[in-house]
Length: 206
Ligand code: GAR
View 1: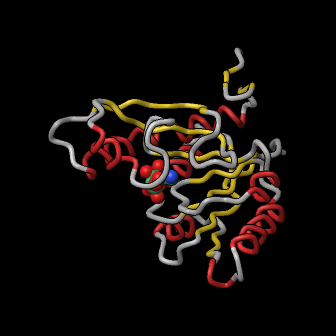
View 2: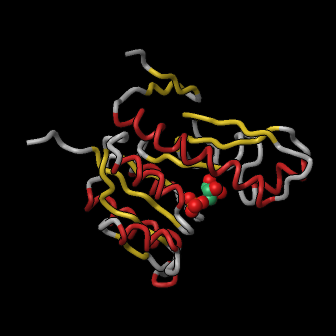
């Protein structure tokens, strides 16, 4: 009998390349976890197809079926509690989660964002970076708190910004790094290697 697997839920809204990176690292046994459920708030999200292709349970949660944001968040809480997941990974999930959700899974929600936070939180961070004229950008994996892209930072990766870049070329360069750091951040949590003190996340030594 193997030991109990670390269970992930992955929340998505779009193409799901970060979900795919997690699936690939699990299948290659680099990431010692299993994905219990993939949940999307967008019916057509290709991420749902990726889950199905790998035999992972997937679920579309329609905001329109709920009277308000609180009711939608509660449905999400119920789904995730029923799965008894160890960690919730937001992977291109384009909804802001309310206080009740955050409190239900304190310290167990992480997100990936395509900028070097705290620069350029919110929507279109790659466009914000280009418009600001920064020479480097990148991506950040962080714990989720009640703010927008504001929680303690776990890992970051830096990419150069070239004069010739547009939103698409910069996004692609950043995305490549996302696929590297997101599974690595999850594995740090699997191994219980992180200590959080106020804003500061440090890695325990072996
Ligand atoms: C990724 O770039 C992710 O960092 C970003 O959405 C994209 C999803 O791509 N997330 C956010 O902007 C959240 N604030 P994917 O669906 O291919 O993983």
